[in-house]
Image (cartoon, rainbow, N blue to C red; front, side, top):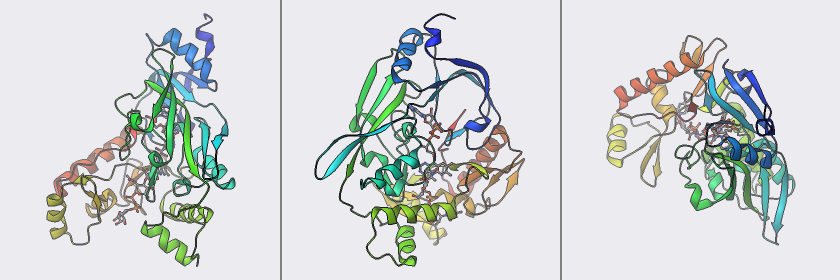
Length: 343
Ligand code: FAD
Ligand code: EPU
């Protein structure tokens, strides 16, 4: 082994079963834990021309249908600090390997507001910008000021402004255009010292009302989100899943009206470029809720969540997902797109 190779320590044939929340058995031919940004830069500088790594966080938005032949880099540098602050706000730097939910709690403990609606999303900070994580009326793009990443082809450290990240609904340049090129190592958040509640999402309002909270704090909103999520979504530690398996489709107003005329109870929400439909509603009304095929299932409480009942393989889950796509297209004329990365 040369010096350059030893900058990162690679292990061979590493099981990824405990590193993806579906709990799928698959191996990485080579695997390295990256805890040091500058070591990653040196490795990329030496190897970036020849190697095309696969970037792994907590594997909570991933479906593995095969082993991974590329070198897998688990991006795991740690650290959270306030970089600058004034009376109104603070700029917080979080390293990519910090667990997301623990980071949200860290900000709330310090009276920093803005991430409370994003409580309890699994995974690590570094993956947050990749699909512009969102929940309960807030997306990370609203709080993320910039992103720092290592260019895995050259080893250079690059800063992306919010605009350069090209955030969209469950999207950014890191998810598609530049996937596996930039390893995000740090994310900077602008957080407010005064709380302004974002409780337009119906579920939060009813949860707060049930708890008789009239003037919520950021903590109250976080607790409400935690309670709702814990009721609705299966815990990956108990039953393998990757959250929503499909994105909510956006269709034209004409198409949405046509569907609403046939299905007056269909869930629909205004979107900037049309109407957003609830994929969970479409899947449930196509008759898939609670069904299981070869260990791969549609969760009985939430039709948008595919689950591993124990014996599923990546292939059986992907087969189920494709059957659902074909059926929803046939029944409603709507194409569903997978949200997780499928390998
Ligand atoms: P991984 O699954 O490991 O990776 C996801 C993608 O990001 C891959 O393409 C990977 O290559 C890339 N990536 C990971 N780390 C980096 C990095 N440092 N640099 C560059 N690329 C990287 N998502 C939501 O948006 N909203 C939700 O409400 C939500 N709820 C969920 C609930 C459950 C129960 C589960 C299991 C998942 C949920 N998710 C949700 C999906 C998932 O948790 C998020 O997308 C999360 O950000 C993925 O983080 P991860 O570290 O597990 O990334
Ligand atoms: N619905 C059904 N049947 C179901 C499930 C849902 O009819 O089995 C309908 C209901 O009408 C419900 C509507 O779908 O009102 C929306 O459901 P929910 O509020 O649970 O939200 P979602 O659209 O399924 C989205 C995100 C989640 C996020 C929540 C809360 C996507 C793809 N999913 O889910 O994100 O946590 O809103 O904001 O946008 C994820 O991305 O992995 C994820 C979990």
